[in-house]
Length: 345
Ligand SMILES: NC(=O)c1ccc[n+]([C@@H]2O[C@H](COP(=O)([O-])OP(=O)(O)OC[C@H]3O[C@@H](n4cnc5c(N)ncnc54)[C@H](O)[C@@H]3O)[C@@H](O)[C@H]2O)c1
Image: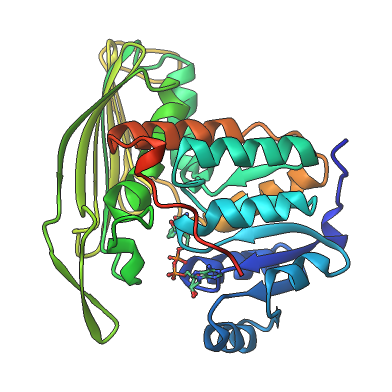
């Protein structure tokens, strides 16, 4: 049986102390979690971040897993280390929150699933777009069939991705697909169901070197990827890149009774166009705006509730495994193309 862990008693171990770990640590603090521990393979990084974030640093994973009261491990390392850390945590009967994408391959995904089943523990992956009010509104519009039967979705996510060299390195699970497209495939499957067909249209490295801090590093991974997906009757064109100087994201869905445009960006509106009135939505455009949200607080609050025994129906392990499977198909890879999982510390 899954042992429920009340939020006020929860202790969390965060593994990896980079950009996204900072967002997680701040979110846990905002959510009232005071027992936080940090492990990073780099001793200088872990000492610096532990002082900066006011959390206790530990020297290795075994020490972290052996601490009294640790209920969950939050994996914030580069993607190539997700599976080994998630599995070690599950074997120690800890719940796991793992940053996206879940892992590098369906083979690793199955190993994580087996470990989660054996331990009766939750694995939730950081697909935070599902927690944005604009996208939840779009989900309800689709469920209410406000725009009729959807048949086409155009989906875009572009950003700089310049924070770390591994994000531009083949074999690390990054590039435009791992870093960006994973989020958009998740949104597409949440809206339209599992992906039946995959048609990679274009992958390229537009910027062969990247400025990371004060260094210029070569980029071997793709920084743009465009694919056509099909989920049931819906054709989905996904553009994702690490070549957009700032950040850009939007979705644009066409249906038999109209269109929906929306974005995670608070300065872009959500526009619902109806050919004919449906419910409260009159013919023509209805325009909505949504405030900026801390989605890390929303998703990690959901995770804390789930490990405390609340129903866990969003961002299930199976959803994340489907995304890995779709990415694997897009990348044209089989399990044998993957480098073996790297050793963890
Ligand atoms: N949900 C989102 O919107 C979002 C955004 C950015 C990144 N991410 C994901 O978060 C994860 C981390 O990304 P990031 O931007 O924080 O990267 P980052 O490079 O800033 O941080 C990674 C940290 O992990 C440490 N590390 C590397 N190998 C390790 C190992 N074997 N054991 C322990 N620590 C190790 C590094 O020293 C570094 O401090 C990735 O999976 C990425 O895809 C998610």
